[in-house]
Length: 79
Figure 1 (cartoon, one colour):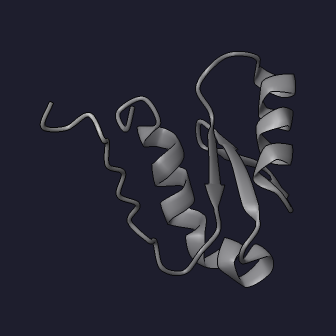
Figure 2 (cartoon, rainbow, N blue to C red):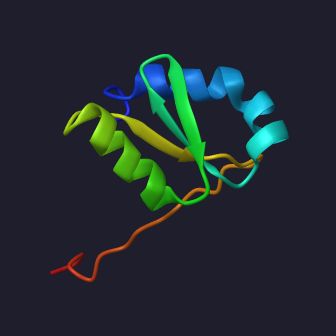
Figure 3 (cartoon, helix red, strand yellow):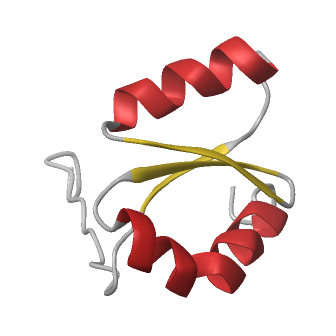
């Protein structure tokens, strides 16, 4: 998945400081090397991504200063 969105993640990384200054806490819709728009909610950004691009990979990323790793566990482990 990361390889699939490599260009979008690089775009976010290069424009992160500008985005934080203008839209901290909001959600960026990114396709290829363009930040398409910024939205107040994640679901609005996702809806616009599907409406505009269809069922193809695009990135919706929350604009934050510090990334918080997310850990997921499964109750199926150890069975």
